[in-house]
Image (cartoon, rainbow over the protein chains, first blue to last red):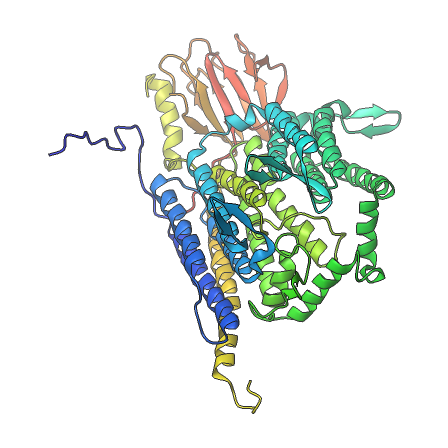
Length: 472
Length: 155
């Protein structure tokens, strides 16, 4: 017989107490069925007869989903049960769209093998799921975020500056930073760190910012000295990303900052002041940068230059129109004209247009509703958080995802000027998926309500007993 | 549809498949909204009577263990006297030591002329001091943190 000592989890100090997560399981089963229906619809359209097509990619994705669910069950924490299925649905739709788009849009070689768009996206989705699950299970304390907020801020600025020095150009914007074979966009990571810093700073100085004021003559201004650290951090971040022409990130950082400031202080004057500064800054950028001028001009009238600057926006509008209410069906849209994609960058910035064409208004609204669900869960986690830091962190993380989706969807449908940024969980791209997985992982960890609380009435009585008997 | 005008079985089943996918998306959203509704109902049904909690950070000999928590009423008195809402059997605490009151939307701490003083975040309380959630107060040797009310219990 073997003499290998059997080490149980209990001996290792791990208390494994599984907790069933029925709602999550039910929703995940529903997500799987929906995605399989979508896969069948796509394969049948492409094949011309009823078919299921190649189920390998979707199969791996679904197995990974249930793996994360199982890990959550075994970990036994009481986390939110809706976030994972909602994000899983968005990721699954992303996988379907990437399988449907021409595979040579993105091609990378790893270990002698060539991977197209869909396998690469699947790989990143798996990394994102692992990260999300890992954070949700492992993170039990927020001190490592709370205490080192200035260190995090410094790291974020260092990352941005590193892109500045070593970065690579993508579509006219200096975004990519490569470490060895892996390239990423640090501006995605910086948005998460920015929220951590802002939440930490605002939680510490909330009362000062909400109550005090600086008097300049007859005007009562917000307490300027206490705004300085945040102003410096935000100024550097905004300066660097707008210098790199990453306008989407600049807009996202600023909006999230304003929202968080309002949530922390409930002072309308900050919002008014912030919007005034925003308008002034936009006017300056409009004068300084030809890129900004171009984006605004295209937004106002894309038909002025339909084959040049307005091409992308016009194509996206045509896609919306041809989609109609029910859409053309997955696989039946217009992916390419000749060999070029119908809409430039359809796999990342304009993925919403692809969805709106093939799934129609109905499908596009369903995708948008998923973001509303994420917003509801996140703000709910914020509202039930135990202290100000956790509340602000949860609210900020939620806002990052939702505001980012609003910015790019608004840009795709010509509601606001287009600023290049990814649609969270749906666009192709590792940095975006990893950063948003960090966000959801932290939200899951924050939503954990610890061990089952004792019934309320006995708590008071115990307090008396300790006090009187002098022992617990 | 065929050119001949007859109904093509494949076209119909493909159309059904497409509709099934879209319907599935909304079925998911319906299931999610039912979960949300249930959460909201249970939250409003079990609205906690407590307005905040005190969590013990550091205790005295024979006092409540670190991590123990007390729910708070709108007026919570702390002291050595047994008639206090939270009575602490600590020789360094006065009989009527301090009072926590919830007014409007926030907590206030007041010292009731104690011998050793009441401290909020390490600073002695003079008069009435406003408290935020997460702040630490000290009464005698007992250090407690003011926390938000416990979230309602769901699922």
